[in-house]
Length: 390
Image (cartoon, rainbow, N blue to C red; front, side):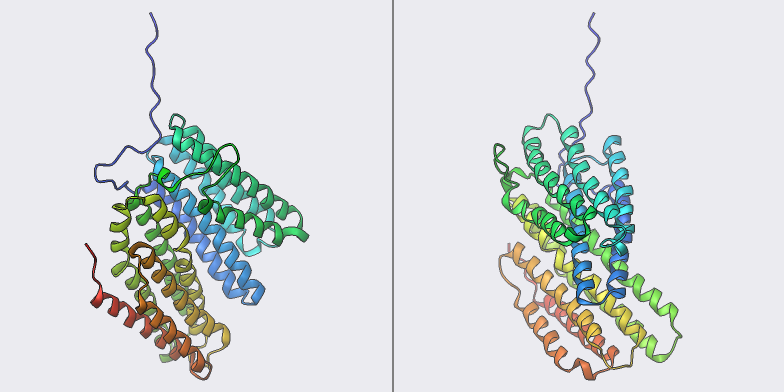
C-alpha cells in the first residue's frame, strides 16, 4: 500500500470574500519595532540638526520606511497566521531591532550593524517568500527579479559599511537602486520585468497597513511632546506650548484620517489596477507624510524647550517645514487616488511659507500656533468641501 500523500498547508493568504485581507496581530507586533525606529530617528534629528545631520537622518528614514513597506507588501500575500510566516516575521523583528538600535551611530561605529541588519531583512525576506510561495509561478518570477535587485543593492550596503571612505557613495547608490526598482518593474535580463497587473494586492490591507504606520509616527510625536513637557517646570508658557503641540498632533491626525484615508482605501480596493495605485500612493507618496510628522516632532521639542524666545531657524524649519511636508504628502496622496490636485493644500503650504517670512521675530509658541491654525483650517476646509465622486 502506498502511504497517504500529505499536502503542505499553503502559506499564502486565502482569498477574502470582501477582498480585504485582515491585518493580523503578528503584523501589529512586528510594527512595534518601528515605533522604536521612529523614536530613534526623531532623537537623531533633534541631536544632529546640521545640514549633514539632517541629510543623514533623512537617508536613514528612507531606509527604515523601505524595510517596513516591503514587508507589508509581502504579508499582503503571505498568511501571518501560518507558523512559518509568523516565525519569519519574528526573526525580522530581531533584525529590525538591531537596525533601529544602530540608527544613532549608523554612519560611524555601527555602520555594519545597521547595513547587515537591513540587508538581512531585505534579502532574507525575499528568500523566504521564494520558498513559501513555491507553486505560484507568477509570484515566484516577480520575487526572483526582486531578489536580483536586492542582492545587488546588498553588496553595496555591505561595501559601504566596511569601507568608510566609500560609505556615503555606496549607500546612496544602494538605496537609489532599491527605490527605482519598483517603478522599473524590477527588470532583469532573462527574467523580463513585472507589470503592475501582476501585483494582485489587497488594496484595503495595504491601505490599512500604511495608515497604521502613520499612527506610529503620530504616536512618536505625542511621546516627544509628553516627554519634553515632563522634563520642564510647569509654567504658563510651557503649558501653552504643550497644548499647541498637542493640537498640532490632533490636526495631523484629522487631515489624514478624517478627510483622506477612507476615500483612498475605497479607491484602491475597487481599482482595476490596484498594484499600480498601491505602488505610487503607498510605497512612494506616504514618505513625505511620515517625514513631515517626524520633522514636526522635532519642532515640538524645540518649541517646548524655549516657548517664548524668538523663533530660531531650526525651529521654523521643523515646525513650518514639517507641517508643509505633511500637507504636501497628503495632497500628493489625494492626487494619486483622485486624479486631481487639491488646491486647498497648495494654499496651506503657501500660507506656511509666508509665515516663515516673519517667524524669526515671533515667539516660538506663536509660530507653532499659527502653523497649527493653518493645518486646522485646511482640515475644516477639506471636511466641508469633500465630495466623493461616484
